[in-house]
Length: 497
Image (tube, rainbow, N blue to C red):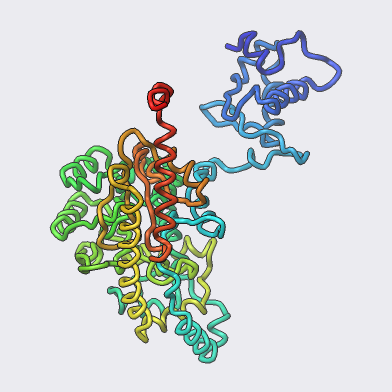
């Protein structure tokens, strides 16, 4: 029922409705005023049409017309079986409708801006960013890239600047298969691994499906599966209990498992060979596909990691995802996916809708860099430089007082330090001070599906040259110390004085 309190909240409790204009318009305008002033907040549920009609002593058709008028202007949105909800405030520009209220429900699930924020910080010259994952770009083989570009254009200018197949140029698919394993027809070229995750979510996940993900896990994957309407269930990668995983599969019947088993993002953990074999056996027995995000495989700092799940897979249960963003440069926007031909075919059909084909010139250049050895020479240099940068960052944090305040496990590869704050300190409190120090990191909560991680944070050590590690570590520890001071209670402050 709709009582007097609700009518007043809607701006409709001041006596009978006027008869000099269409009544539905007066009702719509009253509700619009409530939305504009904030009395009716975003997601406020309006009374049911029949209840409001009874309270105002008008026909249900009048209320339906009022709600439809508001909906055409993007101010409310109706859901069958759920009701009508405030979706946006009127545009300040005076536009005839509110753009935010026109956004599709599926798109509104993609409202988390964490990735956009960390990329914005990475591109801001006034901020020292250890947020976005980036290799040591100062060592990128610019001259070799330029020579490969010149040769590609001279060799086939029409191919370099013309159309290409959605699946990727044959020359790159062949180079990827030869260098990383597999067959060319199993390879789909992508605009980075993130596009692969988006395609896989669109291809394999229906709203309501369960997806088992690493806990903690890559935030881009969590956002993508969330946007697809999936129910995300975390498998604790640090405990890596296979019985726990089997229990999750049995209980939730997931559509797929997503895992980043080699130098995992964010923890740096690598799945042992025995566990990889057991995971493949479990997935095959319970008929659950695995998406293996192998982004960091080539970035080992000491001993090469165990074979990939994909290379060990004999039952075609693994879809393998990789990128050149971490081993060459993120600005190339070039990655790939390896899977069984039926999945490659379906993904290519989805891909063509928004991305008919990747830029051919970049594909030709990277293919040549793989074939002529430039890619592997660059990797060898990266490993040496990343080891230097890891050690420099750890040493600098220790010199600037991390002991007892910030803990981490020294990673054997990848790009990150996964850090835990001591005591009651939260990463959100440190982040406030860090941004004041013009340094950006990623808070731990972004990597969890269950509200955990408030005392954890991720630092990308590979993006900081060794000669800048002291400056960055000093800023981070100043932020930690500043947040600790904020935690002091008034009584503690008095005692100190």
